[in-house]
Image (cartoon, rainbow, N blue to C red; front, side, top):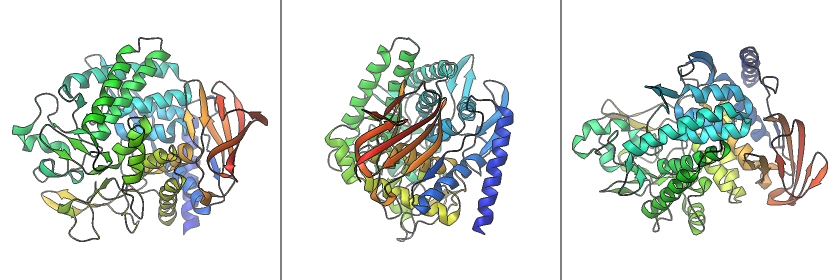
Amino acid sequence: MKKTISYILLGLLFIQCQIMNNTYTHQSGGCIVPELQTGHDAIDKAFRIAIGDYFTNIQRYNISVSDTSAPVILAGLDYDRPWTRDASINCWNAGSFLTPEIARNTLLSVLTRENGTLRIGGQYWDAIIWVTGAWHHYMATGDDEFLETAWEAAVNSLHYYEETEFNKTYNLFRGLGWSDGVAAYEGKYAHTGGSAAAFHWPEHNPEKVAPTGYGIPMMAASTNCLYYNAYRLTGKMAEALNKDTGEWAEKASRLKKAINKHLWNDSTGVYKFYIDEETESNLQETLGNAYALLFGVAEGDQSESILKNQHVARAGVPCGWPPLDRYTKDSLHFARHNGVVWPHIQGFWAHAVSRHSQADMLYHELNNLANHAIRDMQFAEIYHPVTGEQYGGLQERDGKIVLWEATNRQTWAATGYLRMMLYGVFGMNKGKDHISFSPCIPKELGSHPELKNLQYRNMKLNISVRGYGTEINKVYHNGTLKEQAVIPVNLTGRQDITIYMGSR
């Protein structure tokens, strides 16, 4: 049975490659599929399954801003269109390497043009994640034409949300946290009239809405970290386009200070989930903490504190903790958006801990997710934090709390696994003019992990690591000893990078 499913995946992958080769041309010559060999059977097979899930979710879609129909990356098997945050995360995780032109289509597909103004569409509070996805796409491809479009959408969107969702008293942006589901929230934000959608809150609490914008007064850690990164990267876009960068650097600095002033919690040692002008939530929002580590919002002792205090469950890091009382009728059940394991969040957490040399913490997420994928022959949307089974969690539906299903072949779950490998294990760091490597190799992976045939601009990268740990001993590029694990982005053709770690 497993062999049959594998053949189906390979067949679908072949078909998708043919579709792509007939719908776009790229200097790479079309579909380039990377290969992983670590000697760890489950981790290597899960990589292949992730690639398969990614390609099976590429479908044609009508792109409104260009009035064209083209292949895009859908959010998963159970979706018929891209979602802004999924599109941004999937391109950032791996899509801009695997299928650069399809990633470009996907990012463009979630833009809107209203009265001649180009902006980012989607759920308003975290739509700004698109700026991060767009910048990483530019770095992976060097697409100058796309960068011009990205700059226009980023600037217009930031100015729009400054006018509608910025709380000038706190210098923070309003909006929900990582989740659009009510099962993430407690207190007054759980009062949505029995709806599962947290964004229905204003219509059921009209006396508490914010004076401008959508009306939700919440200011969340993850959302504000995304705005901080958007400011920072819009400044990088400005620099690349020879535009003034001053406005963006200043705004980024001011927002970072506000996040650390209002959302850091000394007593818990992690960031608060959210605050408003009356209340605060000290639940652990894993994505907010991961973003803070990755974007440099957390500094010094804060980073060490997050690594020490973030709760990690047996089956992986949960999306939020501790469990919410209204869903914990017994020890077997958890909320759909609290306590359970979402693989795309695992991917960001694993990447973040690898940047802080925590190879054991990286392996915990990597190995758990790999085993889940091998068992199910796919990457599901959500897993139970204790059993590791595919599990949708409890959440309201029509006024009742019921068990939801976890959807199948969720794209950002698959690309979250690829992120663990590309950015975590092999330590890829994209720059405008260079790409560098800072591997984080768990002992369990063996002493010779290899990533071959990874498309990066006009190069095909073959990365081989000898040893384990996080300290680099020496580096060879195409057989020549180098001082650092860094290569320029303007090279072409095959590039062999061999990195010897301090521990062997």
